Length: 221
Image (cartoon, rainbow, N blue to C red):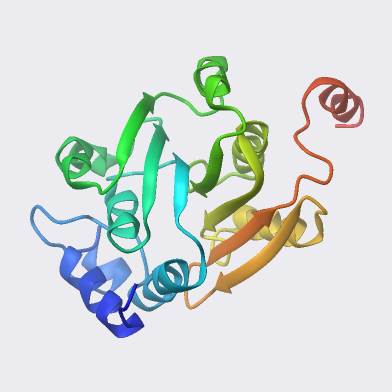
């Protein structure tokens, strides 16, 4: 896509934030209620739009208002998307409006806890199809690791993983540091102006902790 990083930043600001005092750009009525730093997010979106191939099938875990899900797809082509969100964020109320303008085919919405058996069961039919996942749900160490393991179970080898708040939330920072040493992941880019947006490729060297690996892991946890 022929667009500059500065043009994307202007579009971020025009789309509106979740909280002007905290995110340093205005809230826009009927906007996207983005929870992003404009510079950092513009750098990330520009990278996705210009450096990586389009996605055929994405899994978004944790969408809040859905603004990020919509904004990224305005610049980075994603054919199909599954959305998984617990639906408890104060701005989730905007999702019904925002999803109508998301430039993708939303094939499934799972409004439930990503750590539930029901969520895993609903995703298993798509096993091996996802080539992109944006994980921005539970920010606790255990919760984020659970979301990563869930994603690893259903994505394909080479899938792009994106994580938010990897430079700001202590437990997310911890996970980020561990992923840098994990043979299953290769870091492609890291945007850390304020909150942290980290892009990894899934190499599937060890794979998900399911079956025998999951049993062994529990013995030592």
